[in-house]
Length: 313
Length: 278
Image (cartoon, rainbow over all chains, first blue to last red; front, side):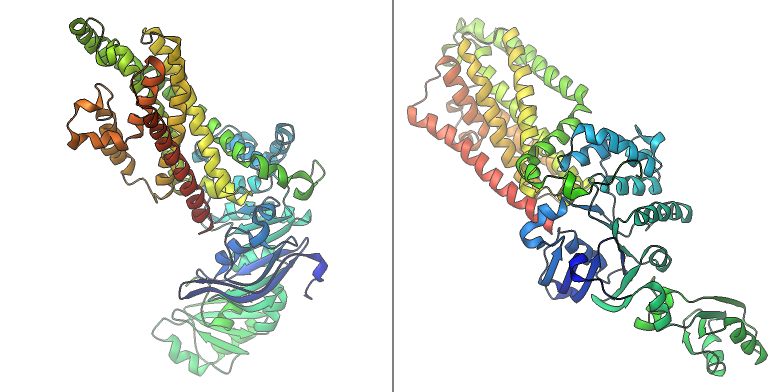
């Protein structure tokens, strides 16, 4: 995907750096987010995603580089920028002393929004978050998925120019994740600019128009999920398991099959244009895997190719 | 979400308004939170003075007044002597409740201060908001306590009304200092219990609360000298019944409280901002 024109940029970072003592958490990264775009920061834990996120939410000062958010420098106009953003932190910071409605109301008041506006807006947000019947419930009575939806609803109370979500579905069960994705997808359809950090490749593929793959504070690759897969992987992947003591031995004998191969401790990955064909060739050589799976190539494979490691180590 | 036109934050949110009123929004949150505990606050506000006044003021007071013909310490009845100190203690405890656990709740337990910060409020505004709520709590506590003292006939003169602003001032100054201490706490770890037992309790006992500080040996008097409670009690007694204080000492007492408040507020503002940006 071509980079958006500068005048459309909601966030622009050039050589963005964050250093803690001797440790460089974010190491001179460049990226830009355009209005209406769903932009992702994908990488394993410790890649520098959350540090980057905190800098672009104007809550953490950068050590170096240029950063512009909503055309303002966060070092000079932090509060003004933050007032126009919506932030969903990695850990929910809902107030357990207040009920669901009050959490939304009080948060709206921090933006100076009127009671009249908030009364109407909160009804909309509760419907959006599917929490209408939990209006007067205590926060502690909500499930993990409900708390996340409430935190997202809270971040929308000021109708933010950019909604930034740090690991929005970490710790949620699959059903709760899908409900959340559905809500975020609706926002995307409405044209809300989204910035999402995640270490789930399926989440990035589902929600992001464009993303950067980060590792050790650096950008390893940038592009749309499809273009990254096309550029760094084959269309299909065969996963075969021969037992941890035999994988290495068999891998030498099937190394010529497919475009490329990765031997992991528990399985062998063969990247190929036609996965079924590749699996048939393996069996034809007299190797019968304990388990086999042919699947579409994913961002996980891209990350493995770029770093030599899996996303969730 | 689709029901109404999406206006966008740039239309809806007035950042200049937030810059002006941010501290009030934080105070609004704290008051709403306080109202969740109104029964406990009221019970503490009413129960504490009634218990003290009955046991010490009336019980011990009757004994002392009988032996002094109603002219106890400072030549006034015992209840009038201890009333400024009891009221000052209540002010101090009311403020303490609002600047200790709520600050740990904000930074550590629920991290609600980080949510406020992400919404555009500054560390200074959050600290000021907490301070406003502490002052409001002190006003309530002092108002209730003063009324009960009045009902118990603790005051001989309408000048005792001076105690109200003096003790609200004490609550604000002590509250600011304690808020600064709370801002450094990563978690409770029993520190507030330690402060209660080893700071507040000695302060209550050795600040000339039940007898003149000068009757204590010099080795213990210093506890009173550094205690904001003693300074506020001295000023309260001066204004409510002409407790003898040299003019310059009046300035020292008020100056001590003021310095404590200003330094506390400065440190708290700074520490709040640092912790939110760390």
